Length: 420
Image (cartoon, rainbow, N blue to C red):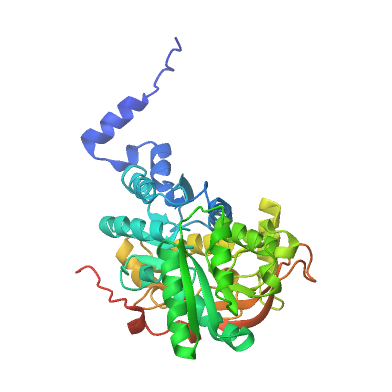
């Protein structure tokens, strides 16, 4: 046994003396340092398996880069940031809610991030609202998140589904015709996309020939495609995402539908375009962020940083995750607090700095709705563009988000704040 040196004071004795006398100076320096360096925790509850695994993993990569940059710049309120990760699955709301409660109740996260799936985002938002935790939804699009079921503590990075349809519907009708048939994912995301297109058709004199609600995770679309083709539409509109959209487009091209009918949708993802054979990289879509943006400051640096980290170019999903994590830091550092209400107030109307916003229009969180408003990129898929093998989308028009977002009143958001 090691003998104590003469005159040495044991650690236990120091602690006992501090407790008895209340003299803080006698607490060991290592304990003071440990308290000061307690990490600020961000909890990401997002799909890493299932239909939305690819998009979820890219949002994770964006979060990770943001956390690295935040820590390199001094962290949040001078404390380092820790990212805790849970797999929500792609479609199980029960699992997403369970993981959200674990992150909040057991892991004591200061912020909640997620989800790719709109229905899971809505379920998680009820948990974060109940617990009073600031919640950033990077990539769940359904309108209600910042609409009819909006909460003071819930902010969204990606566009609403109505913004997506408003950005492209008129262009499609003007260029390809007004008779449309819809293949729509049967959950919150697809439902509100369909509502948006229905309103656009009414506004611009279009005709809805039919609609099929298709379960998430469907792999065989043949019966739906045959039914759509039989109505002789000008456009078949695919209101789905992830592996569902990838499989549907593959089969549409196998049937040769693109030779007779225009194929289009709302948003598309680089993850989907990469998974398609070149002949199926077709149709008109909305990209919510794109890595080829000449003359937009800091985009090239962001692309280089992501490529160094992951070996691939960033997608819109990467940017969603990046902005989501940075939003947490910006809110806390502006509020000079980790109190959720103070941070939510600090985000009202906040503009993202150029190195985070990475868009022609400066993105900002609209006051009273908590919806990020930036730029949308309307264009068409391509087998390969001038910028290299990753350039699978051609931007035809940059749409200003504020022009397609409607008003806060039209969104249905009636936000109430906790009483002081």
